[in-house]
Image (cartoon, rainbow over all chains, first blue to last red; front, side, top):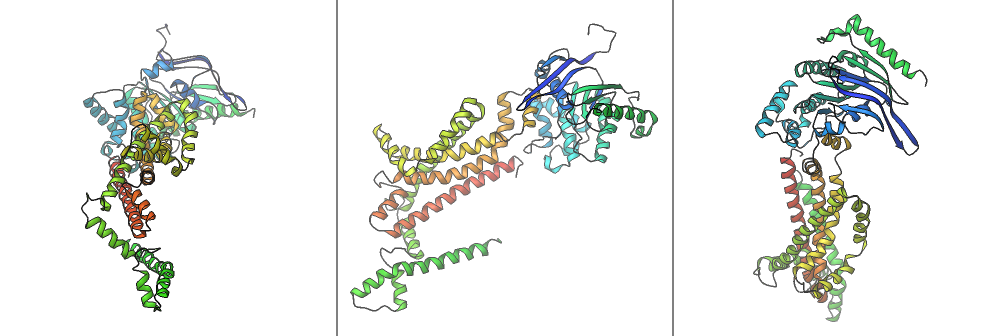
Amino acid sequence: MSDTAQPEAVISVQNLGLTFQTGDGSVEALKDVSLDINRGDFVSFIGPSGCGKTTFLRVMADLETPTGGQITVNGVSPEAARRARAYGYVFQAAGLYPWRTIGGNIRLPLEIMGYSRADQVARVKRVLELVELSDFEKKYPWQLSGGMQQRASIARALAFDADILLMDEPFGALDEIVRDHLNEQLLELWKRTEKTIAFVTHSIPEAVYLSTKIVVMSPRPGRITDVIESPLPRDRPLDIRDSAEFLEVAHRVREGLRAGHAYD
Amino acid sequence: MKSVVPVLTVVGAILVIWYAAAVWLNAPWAYDVAARGDRVLSFAQLVADTWAQDKPKLPAPHQVMVELWQTVVEKNVTSKRSLVYHAWVTLSATLLGFGMGTVLGFALALGIVYNRVMDMSVMPWVIASQTIPILAIAPMIIVVLNAVGLSGLLPKAMISMYLSFFPIVVGMVKGLRSPDAMQLDQMRTWNASRAQEFFRLRLPSSMPYLFTSMKVAMAASLVGAIVGEMPTGAVAGLGARLLAGSYYGQTIQIWSALIMAAVLAALAVALIGVVQRVVLKRMGMA
């Protein structure tokens, strides 16, 4: 990374391996994974279940410990990055606390990280505007729809100063119409905040629509089979999905997924 | 308001059964007395007699109510004949024991959740403690504590504590562990300290469990206090009233003490219910 001519790698991974020991033998969740994620990238991880995409994201977040290889986040170990609160993590479920209002839920990480009271108020207001939930600050989670709850959980991950956003199938449980809308909003957010985003999904259109880089993975052992640099421009209206370029990328992703499955 | 009719129906049915049972159970004594006096009882006389005996096998409801009125309302509350005085003696031991039991149960639950050694070792002992009949161990506690110079309120409260810590431990272990893996991971991604995780996630998550356990613990605590009053020589308290009543065949006194105990338990549990509703409402969970 001393080479300044290259774009700055925020997350850098070499020959990463992770083997889970289970009751009936060991499972290679990740094998020989190497990848660089650059500042400002939107990287999607796509693959069938069991390909290790979520495990990979959890390794970046220091929620799993790799058993081999190297990984750095912001130039340091994932643990140091986690302790420095370098990333926001959005889980599959919104995971809002039912005893806190939407505003209170977004304030939670800010309280934990010791932001001043005035700063908390300002930040909650700002991120609520960002996800278009300003009118819902005083509402409780059960008063919101599933899509709104997930938006609130994204706002929570954006509220503090982390320039990396790790998202684990955040829209997996939502219907397609809501998902389209949230994808559009997410791109808008990404452009405005200039965060680096790692995004796990199992939807090909979602991956192609959102990403600057698509990482195709396959299972047993979990590994990367293809890395596609998207030729699409950063400005992406929803109807870009009907363009020839889009379909071409989607086709290549599908081919990659099929190749990974060829042997079983 | 819709529940008034069903409740009154049930109360009415209980009274009917109670009065009928009083006639049935007290009839032998009435016939006995009549036979010795060479009298023959008409049905009306029989009923009147069975509902007005001095030491009936089963006192009629109105006899118990009269006794309650005389011992609750007409006696000065500082008098040893006042049921309010005895109820207060029992209630003070119940509340002290309940408080101690809640603190002990909470502390044990904390240990079990946060300390692996305690997690592996404490629960079997907690369960074993509850399999010992309280009636067997209560006199031992009283005697041992008396030997070290402790008597009066504290030994009774200890017995209440012995019964009431158990539901708190079980409920709070469950409650403090109720956050799922995702919520705990989330705390980790924010690099939250253990104290922050406890106060912001585990403790609020456990609140519904806490109140449910406290209701069970309060009822158990009252039983403990009453049992604790029995081996002390029937000095004071509802347990003493029960014991003295059974010595002298004062069934009316026994029943009025029983009803007083039931009312106390209902009031204490209802009080916890009110606190529960207020707290959960303020937390936005109810």
